[in-house]
Image 1: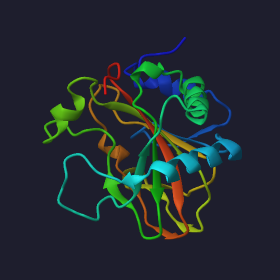
Image 2: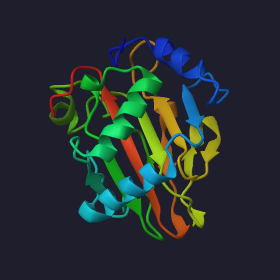
Image 3: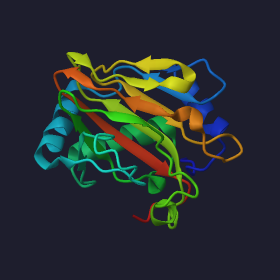
Length: 215
């Protein structure tokens, strides 16, 4: 049985923590996990090829005027493709969240020098674009992100407020809850996709919403 994405944070976090392959960051500020070797090399290679095929410059909501805030490239992944269906099934089995609450899977490519400066994945209540992005499906609840390849240098994901930095590692999944137990957004999930110093970084990201996805 799958759960709604807005189920109590502890319910989904407990499910994730029960997996022997999951590691939880020891902090009371946020539910942050990693799972090494979550995605097999062959599936990662298929996803990388899809990202390379359809990538475009990344954008941000509530544009802050910094042209260098997010310099990566992005790709929306077609839900009908076999590789996308495989990774979606893996995520559903792991988290137990009803896929009807999920946004379409997205891929990102970071070339040398590219980054995504410190940001949160939720849409800030009261922000200029909050209603535009949250009116139908609500805010983001959970983020699941997978590194698809090793990176020669740089490209780490840094959570400054919990003093934790994750290095890129092929197949490694990171996930975190973007909300506090009372439903408010959690600023401790602020994270920085740091500059790639050498090589290229590929990741895929899955976001879940408070309500059924109506994108």
